[in-house]
Amino acid sequence: MALPTTNPTTTNAWRKLKEHFNEVKNLHMKDLFAQDEKRADKFTLIWDDFYVDFSKNRITEETFKYLLELADDVKLKEAIQSQFSGEKINQTEGRAVLHSALRAPESAVVTVDGENVIPEVYNVKQKIETFTNEVVNGKRKGYTGKPFTHVVNIGIGGSDLGPAMVVDALQYYKNHLTTYFVSNVDGDHVNEVIKKLHPETTLFVVVSKTFTTQETLSNANTIKDWFLQSASQEDIAKHFVAVSTNLDAVQSFGIDPNNIFPMWDWVGGRFSLWSAVGLSISLAVGYDNYASLLLGANKMDEHFKNKDFQHNIPVVLGLISIWYNNFFNAESEAIIPYSQYLNQFATYLQQGIMESNGKSVDRNGNPIDYQTGTLIWGEPGTNSQHAFFQLIHQGTKLIPADFIGFTKSLHGNQDHQDKLISNFLAQTEALLNGKTESQVIAEGTKEAIIPFKIFEGNKPTNTIFIKKLTPESLGKLIAMYEHKIFVQGVIWNIFSYDQFGVELGKQLATKILKEFNGEAINTHDSSTTNLLNYYKSMS
Ligand code: F6P
Image (cartoon, rainbow, N blue to C red; front, top):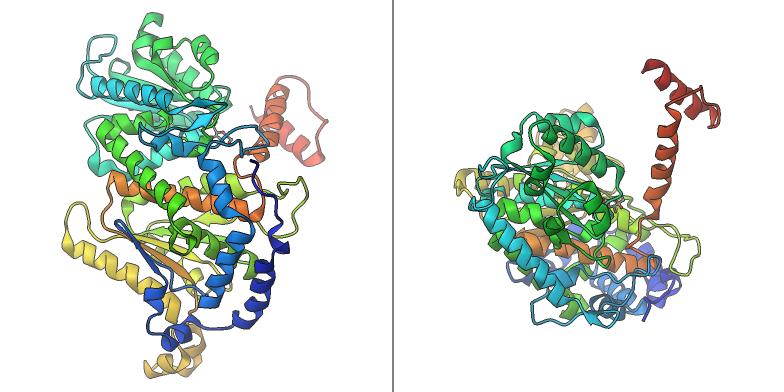
């Protein structure tokens, strides 16, 4: 069954939300808390090691009720079933969307075109496990007989961001292997990494679902050429492995067929870290930790699939986000992890969220006349407090924010942890309550300065408080956002799993690249022509 194609703005729930918005848009959350001492309890979800408090949002019980009705009106339940059962809900590419199958238990049955994909998924996992163990314990060696000390992941987009973010986030669990990521076609990127490598002891993992991506193939070729300055053609088999669906292209690159880790077209690039694309994760933290990451994601899948919407974390977060995006006209959302380990988390989510839901044509092929997508940005606290929080507190824009924190630190330095978490809690409290004129006066502020020190407050936040950063809890957190993406895509009536918007720039870059050799060019708009000719004159 295809996904439903309801225009959300035509539903009863949307109409109710529109009317309701006019009634509640000026309410202050401070008053909502004052009126109901149970507000925090009513709007908190506790599940496993997750404590999700969404009470600091500009919602009432009525808002929540209408949002839940919206989920029903657009047939979200049916859509979730369609996704998990392997239906081809990525209709524009004719593919199923089954990153959930990659973390399903071995006993699960998930069929695509009549065939259960789980046995093949577990075959590849077995290959990842064996390979990881051999590299980590030094059984697998480089061309001069030395064990590997370095791993370089060569990929971009989904073939880079997920593994890079997770390896960074799980550095506490890392083994002795040093891991680098090369992504940008900027040659200075690959050359800076090469500087740190020794060919005898470095393993290269070339990750590209299509194996046609310019950046990845350029970087892989540059690295191969550098490697061949010290080693021979036959040595490539020992040092290069690939993750791809395009087995022929991998072999023509020169990689041994035994060194190919396959993936499938039903795994979207930005949701692929659960497939062999996560090989670098497994190598960096060991297979058991990698398996725990997948287990965590599977637990979130079960929660999302089975929990009623009122208590369903990804559904609730998705609905609240719609409320701000489509009714308050908020354009962006900030992701603020209070953990330095999650330094790359917002960058990772930018692809997941913006490549998926940055669409302006609905599932009927019609242009959309309501807002979709969300601008995603963020940095860890407390650093971000000293960078952009001023604008969130006192700027003119409404920026809903997710605050993500962990009750325990990994190194156990309680003094730092208490300071960190006091900031984590203080910021959402400050964003909620603000500071009134009378409070500013009571502080003895000079009269002329008073207006500048007033905080309006009423700035929405979700607090996602997790017991401890472990591979499993990280898996849950990532899957939580994946499902939030899905919820919003279903409601906005868009196709979340294609990315045609990135193609045009790629096509033009190929054309311009060819034009660098030869006569002056005048076939573009005058701006591009001037810039192109200027570059040619400089090189
Ligand atoms: O930028 C577009 C995109 O197709 C992403 O969706 C994908 O993650 C990335 O390029 C890399 O693609 P590949 O894994 O095929 O090299």
